[in-house]
Length: 340
Image (cartoon, rainbow, N blue to C red; front, side, top):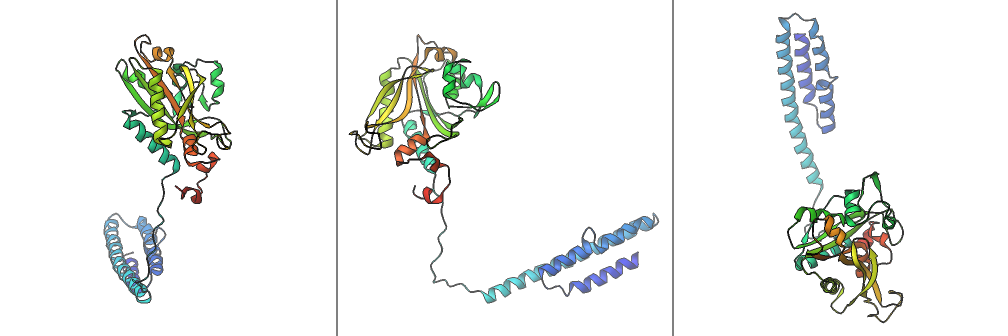
């Protein structure tokens, strides 16, 4: 076996001197040192040797392997250098030619609008809170004054994982979680951006979309505080000439509740096709926090009050950029995204 190893070493060294390409060197490595290589095949016969010969032959085999690997590494380095030199000798770079500018990405319009919403409310003294997208039924519904079998649940066709766990249908659960975490401290003044999920899918709805929820709780919070806050938001988002109106509505977690419209930026409120000749465009829902929600959050509705509002980021984006189909925001068409 010693003779076989010495002959293999000599033959391999001679063959290695003739290797002149990376492909040939790789074939050489597999032939001699691979799992089924010649060196491995010889070593498989060590079981026939005596206990005295095995360590001697094993040491010799390791020395031959190390020697071949060192030689292979040296030849490999020389071949790589020669290939680079050969390529450079046939290639030239004209430094006077104009360069090719990289195709830089753009921020998605949803991200632009969401960042702007956060800037506006942070500028008003709000803090940003986050919560889980896989939510307990208690926080998603019951803590918001929507008990089991309440008809208001039909307004949010949900994705349930188990009987008591679902993908959140709104960012409002973070309101309940924040009240639990902060009670009895005041004031609470937060916005909650994030993804929500409902079983909707058409030109104006998506099964996954983004919301920003707002909550303020303190002593002597009035409806006028809510209107002033939303007017300031609308003017900073859409323009200082815009106005808002509040229409009576119903939400289980606020009382009284109001839908909020912003004056149409196309016709200035005179009425046009964009606003369906009403002069107004709906942007969000809002209201005074329901006393039951305050109680479940650990606050006394006789001592404190608050307001809440919630908006869809997609809807705000569509109104701001005059889009007619929400699916444009999710199709990843580079021609559309490059407009922002």
